[in-house]
Image (cartoon, rainbow over all chains, first blue to last red; front, side, top):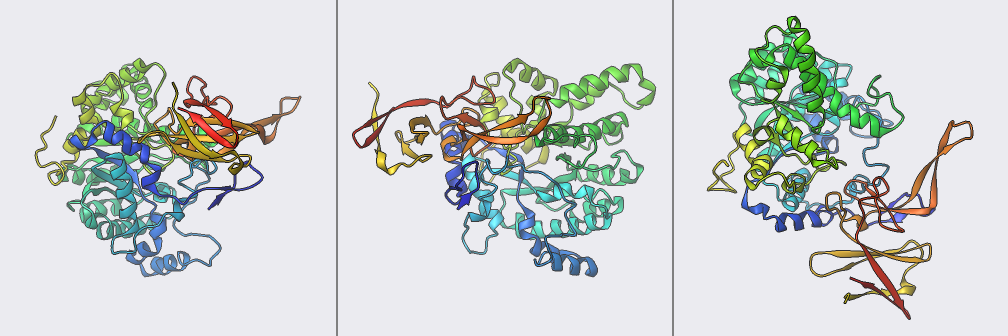
Length: 408
Length: 123
């Protein structure tokens, strides 16, 4: 296949083979003996849009279903009733070649879904045992102007995912997409799918303008707490946002957007004392990296001490609540001065609260060595951050791959 | 003494070509012919270990800033070619292997010798 480059001529590149692309990751796996302990990836992705013609068949509403089947069938000029549309080029204009080459990768034409084949390829190369799989374009669905469309598509996707992906491969789990724009649909989603064994938690896509502390969501949080499964907030960028999209470079809207959306939701979650209202509901802040957490901790603590009356239900500093939350590591910033990163780890109690994530196949993915090679961690800490903490949090049964597993 | 790895015939390379050759059982070296010069680098990105030499070769991007300091667009500068790691997009100057965003990071460089028709890399 040819990829247009800076050259006058196109550059010929091989078809994509995930296993081959990740040969060096497999070498890291072997050199570091990842087979000796479980590795859990708390945030990875597939491209559900590639299966959208399968997914729309699961829509209940006959009118939306007809519309979905029409627009996913092609021949309508590229419009879609589902994706609110995001401008962007995560692949750095093709430099991250697995994006433009993605369609060239072949998978066996057997009963197993292509997404399962592709997932297992990179999981095996990296040495990952279990994953929590998330969609990709649907990470922007919280911006959809029609709440009923988010609700319908979420329900269809959730059903499709459980029937066609997680049911077929026990190493793939998911945190269920919660259609947050419609509080009743959000509640119904948790009710319908909450006790499914492949559902290890619930996921709200963070790019949206809904208040997480709205009374409309309290019964949903209560149900999640009762089910004993955590709630994740998965961030994203949004170049259409008037603030964090106010840049002419994707670099900026990505660097800021992925942190700011989660920062806003987390701040509202804390100052409204949600951890006091739902003390057993654990929250996971996904794909914002780590550098933002010390910033928010310090800002909230500083203001809280001066404006205690605005957060009167808290029984401690905001940062103390934040130390009890969970954070995925990716994309893990790696400052030249590693003391900065170590301090961040200390501030968030990373020994117990940090969860490694790859975000594969997205452009800023992390391999397990981002944690494993940190010089200030001992072997036990590495094992916990790469898998043990997630196994505890999600109550994952890893006995098939690690019959003698004992928590570190 | 450095080990010699036979890369192939010089005449098999045209401008901008590369060939990746094994260096032992668990590593490779990418050999390039760019602007008439030979270069060789380890196929191992210093960032997270990606196969840098398996990525694209792209020209340096430059901004066009007018005398009045206004932005007038961007252009490719083909005098400076970059090896782009396919995992994350880190770019390395083909001339010295340094990461253009942070030159304290670089690809490991190897010497290339052309003897007669044969191209060798000294590993």
